[in-house]
Every structure is written in structure tokens, then in C-alpha cells.
Image (tube, rainbow, N blue to C red; front, side, top):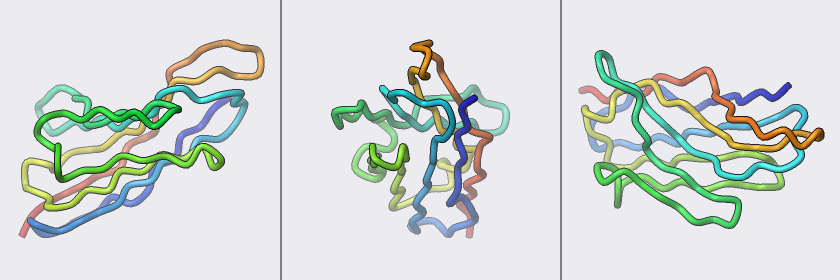
Length: 120
């Protein structure tokens, strides 16, 4: 069993910052890519940012220059630093991890989601 636990969401004013964290635990042999997705009310879940085990990153155009994804491989943790937040960033943010367990089964795992609300 693998668990992803997110933290760091909340209410922030436009222009503010938040830092999300997601820690993976359980039967983990190796984690490949990790990422953040978000889903706003009435919209489909969308990719926000991903990072490979080697540190290569990818961002959706709407967050480039404002968000930074990073990871600590020793802690099986991925972070999302969000600066210059806008009301349109309001959504539930989900952590994602592609990994192999000790039986070398590859799985895609999701966290429970954390709410980010940008409002004055």
C-alpha cells in the first residue's frame, strides 16, 4: 500500500504565496515522476507541473514563472511553491506519483487533495 499525503493549502490573497507538500509512504521501491494536478469547480482536472527523478520539470503555460516544483528523493516528497497567486488558481490540488513497489509493480498514485483558494 502506498499513501500520498498533501499539506499546505489554504486561503490567500491575490499576489500571495503558498507552498504545497506531498509525502509518499508505504511499499515504495522507487518513485519515477511526481506531479501536481488541480481541479476547479465545474472543470476537468489539469496538469500543473511534473518532475522526474532526475529533476527535469514541466509546467502548464498558465503557471510558468510563478510556480516551482521540486522534490526531495530521500524523503519521497514533492513540493509546489506557488507565487503571485491569482483567483484563477483556485482549485483542489492533487499530488501524483508514478512508482514501483517492492514487487516491482508499477502504479500511479494520488493524494486526497488540498484546497487552494485565492480571494480578497
